[in-house]
Image 1 (cartoon, one colour):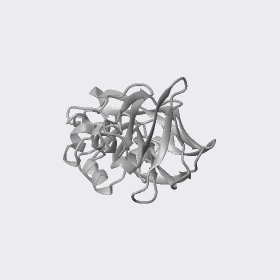
Image 2 (cartoon, rainbow, N blue to C red):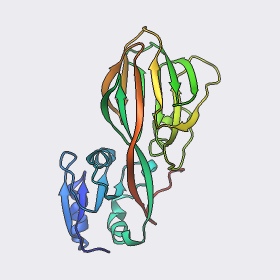
Image 3 (cartoon, one colour):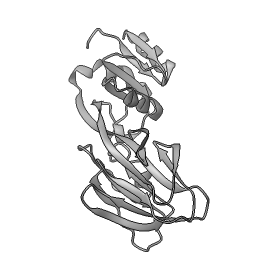
Image 4 (cartoon, rainbow, N blue to C red):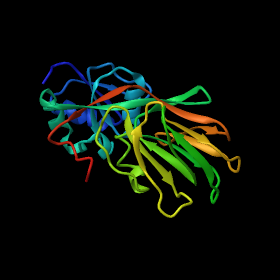
Length: 239
């Protein structure tokens, strides 16, 4: 293993565990990400912070979900010791804009949903060259491969492996008997609100970032990739 320090974001106890194993460590926070070549990210917020920082380290996700092949806290020292033999997965990252204004960077998913309970709206989803679907529903989730085992899976979407730009479109409680789910390129994908019946909130990786008015469009644009180390201790994304 390299003698250069390993950054740790998200849990000081994990940093302490690595120090006890003889690993040189640089600690950081979600607001101050280390500039080390290798970073251990504990939890989804830490993964998102490193992605947004655009420092391009090799990331070891810990307790951050199946989509990024996390390792457990108990296995973190073994995982870091084996980094020189790791396989690298590249997870696409996307910038989200509404009405032309940037609202955030997405690692896992973007969700548009009516802000009021028991209200639905109508959504149109389009790629850069085709209409994907138009439907009435509580909302819609656009999930990256990293996000596909999460909320999108719970509402019927498939789990997919990392691939450039590819992701899942999954309606939320659609007003139809047999709803479709789609695997499409997320680069340039847009969602527009077609009915002025309810306030639609937009969430990026679980955080509400803005609202989308009737006639407005939320659009994804690929902005890079997150490099994730896959090791013997990494969990499967499929089970």
